[in-house]
Length: 80
Image (cartoon, rainbow, N blue to C red; front, side):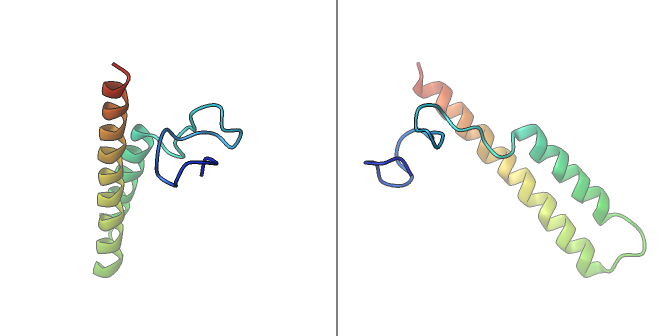
């Protein structure tokens, strides 16, 4: 949290408070992880429950990639 600002308000900053923080994971990495977990879900010899959990993780990464993409788009539009 930036001192003097409520959590979730304003631009993300580094701990020093003077520059934007980099995301922990980027859109391409999310998509790579989604593909990885989707492949794992198709491996033969795993249970249906495990395959379903792996597919859900893949979907979560796809959703996160979409959210990061929308966030980046909004940030670009706000800079105009």
